[in-house]
Amino acid sequence: MSASDEPRRVHFQSPEYLVERLDAVADLFDTDRTDLLVEAIREYLEETADSETFQELVATKYYDDQLEFETVKQLVGTETAQRLRLLKADLQDEPLDLAAPEDIDVYDGDATAVDTAADDDR
Image (cartoon, rainbow, N blue to C red; front, side):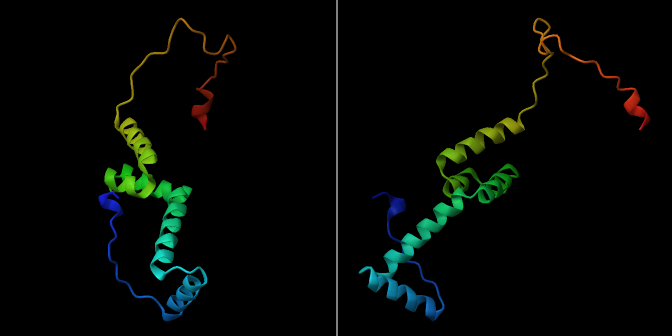
């Protein structure tokens, strides 16, 4: 068991009817309230972390330096956090000033010239 898996006591208040329902479900499954709560929290966090909206929010806040990398790892997992770190580094880099290659015909001879002067009259 790693240090992060060690049990930690948490105290919170809940409406009485929820506790009564939770206890009834625990009795039904022959388990205890804590096990049900831990499982419910785990499932909620996994669902939330997989949500595209949630991941976009995490990415936005990370790119805006509102979240630290370690927090991002906790929120979306190591793999996604690493991908966000690489994208953030890429976004912060200056674009490469490269000239178009002269020895390759990118358009395979099908390029069409556009008169941009006509667009200036709008």
